[in-house]
Length: 314
Image (tube, rainbow, N blue to C red; front, side, top):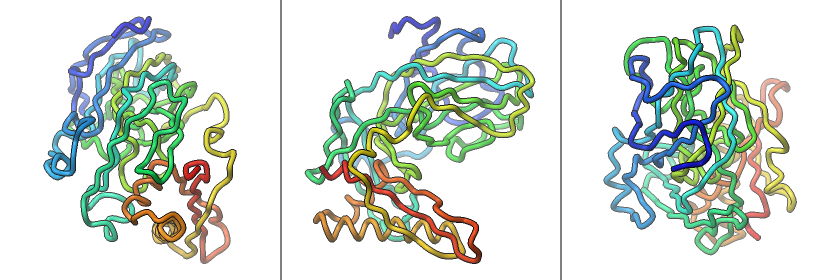
């Protein structure tokens, strides 16, 4: 894997939890670049020819591996590591699944479901979805973070103030992400790459797709960040905006309940007008639709909206 970067890390250098005692696989200086090979979120348990039995056999102790960690020379607690995403080299395949007990509507979707995607690695064509439409592609890193100060092994699943499983789809090419440093050397790791995702990742999975990522590392001394921040290099939804959206809402005093209602109503709309099954609509909403807080000031009720791009349906 030679991409013209200063350093390379292969996917066999990975780990399955945040731990500041993990030995770094390499050290790099601020200003240098690195090419990182990743494993998909299943940890290689799913593949381009996987079926439902493979999903049912998924070992959750092996999911969401991250490649690394990388020691950043000069990084000390209180500093920030700046990661600029230079380029993505997609594999051309991915998967989206409904995993029982996981996802925003886990109480409604209790049976496993799996969709395997095949897509154009040039990213010029949307990825087809079971005859119902096609999803524009926007590769990004779902999980990227630094080691926490707290000792011991910590789950890879929830996001943290030092990053982690953030699933922010705008951590894509051109974006610079800033992460607060809590331990000497920062100990940066990344993985869980996605070919596309809607804001919210409502079923719990995106187009989970292994790919190689090129990044540049910089160091900001004494930044004193309290949580991640990032800067994009341009518009964030221009790849899906042009044909407009269908939008459903949830209204009430609880944002989680309103979010569930907004998504459920979009699934109903897609099923009624486009003839797809509820679980297909759920998976498609996860990889292409966006949850937004539209209003949070008019007590006692708030409004959450779910935006589904018309471009996906052709």
